[in-house]
Length: 113
Length: 112
Image (cartoon, rainbow over all chains, first blue to last red; front, top):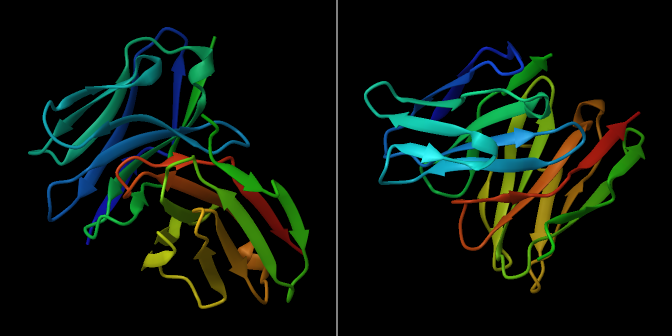
């Protein structure tokens, strides 16, 4: 069965600091991986995705993630945090049937000035 | 291009009632998925429809049902509401599969 584990339910950084949100997955088939962001009282917005090809994926708002098969990881990074990055972030994998997303529990990012 | 819309945005019901939530996907998208989001369980997949056919269903009781119309609009219904059904219900659409889903703002259901 596939699963997603996000290490750290809360991450706090200072404005301008590196953002690192961790995601590990379990999958018996080549995974399709996603990062979504959710702002308060809103739906989910796609940040970036990995399907095949280049393992370093660039997304919106300066975020990027690297697919590491050997580590079964897909960590999300941003070199310099902005106050507007404060939100909840979800890592997700497509299920084996290709019909649903399996989400991690989410990581709340706080950014202080 | 208009995004995914969900109506209503907020809903308050009492135990035992039933509720219907509506989702209009992005124009041209034929796949619609529904997810339940709660603080305790996180985001959980309910079901997915493609061209009016349910292709996949999550691990939810039969009180949760859905359908999709020929214009790809979808509805989900929850009967005999329980307190634990209080959640944010999210709808997502995609062109053909789950590959890249676009989410609506959600319907927040409160069961009293």
